[in-house]
Length: 161
Image: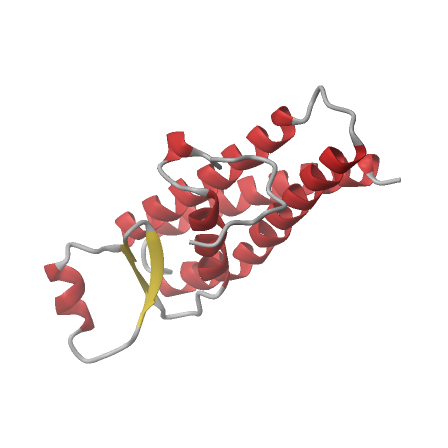
């Protein structure tokens, strides 16, 4: 996998089961979910499943369902939050300018990717509008993302010269 040389944290969030690249790739895929799309998970990565006649049968065969999809998305977002915190904490006591720039770059990337996820999550909510539990879980994730994006934006304003 590609490594982001600007990322100040070596292993993004091993306790979450995701590495740095998987977090960013999954966030990008989430942001691209369209209404009606179904997702599948393979090798810790989200895929938008192509639409075809036997899609329902294949999803059943692989035991893929909306609750597992939402649970995986929650894990991805939690891993992004963990990377966010780890990045902030890893540079808390350092005052070197290049360290601060690297930290800010990672926080900015996370903030932008999380913000973009909101559209994909809203589209996913439309897909499962008939399932109130899924809809509420997605709403909760969106609310948490908005809070994190807002907090990061304020932090970046304060730390920029």
